[in-house]
Image (cartoon, rainbow, N blue to C red; front, side, top):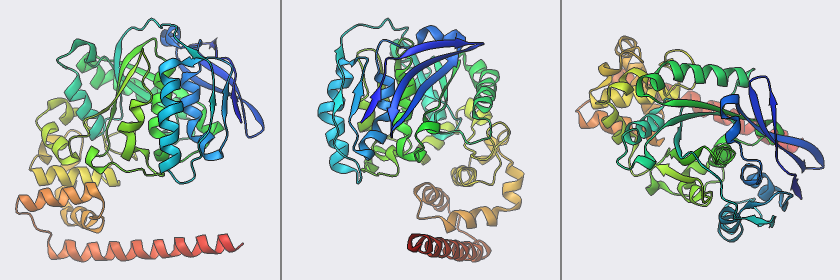
Length: 389
């Protein structure tokens, strides 16, 4: 059993925390979400919605029922009990059907109706910004960029990094576009360490539900097209749009945004969007500085833009000269990973423009693939040895 006590709010220095005592794996812990003091009044302490969603995957993998001292929004409780929990238990290996013990609440929350999207600066979040900032329906027009420390950040000081990422967005894209930026943190990953790709949609929904009095709409930028829907126990992004619909409350609506479009289609439209040319940041190695141009996300994004014939437009965020100086190496990297969807799309775009890999790029790709095979073989060997021990 996982028990969730009554939530409460603390205030220290410039930080507000929404906390709840929990019992998990025989341990007494405190799970919390934190925001800057200007957002403290929006934290929701009269229901356990955020805590239930944050702990759902852990409970189902452990086969542990969840018992809540505080109530849960009636709509959310119904959706979890009767739909989402049975669906996940039936389709995800290692997930068990559990019971969720909580009283429902129909108490209405006063909501500011803010509209947010999770912000990384990558292709998907930039595309969501472009499509929603001038949405035809005022109640769905983007107002906030949300940056979260809920397992996604990996540094020696995640709280400090969150603050720096918020400042970067405030001084850059948000200032230009007239948006607010909110940083939301949690200690969930410290208490329950899970592979982030397996739980990202749950974690994003949890931090938004902690602030239901602020957010009326949340856009989660779809990573994959809806046509690639699959129950993947290692990556919930493949079935995100199904998940998010079950996290909706009477106060807050979730959307898996723009999964009708491929990464290549998004990049084509972003190529004509000046803010993207100034702020696109897919890099996974450099959060605060210019795109590194060498990590997987940088390589495949630059290659796709090259295939579209628009790479030069992004000279403010990528080292375009470096790409052309080492074009064979970049294309070789794409060739070596062509089975991966987003690399494969870049190759298709190049082929459409009549760009064929040079013999040198083909040779280099073979070397890269051989090296990868050796690494994977060694991984399998070590894994087998460890299991025998």
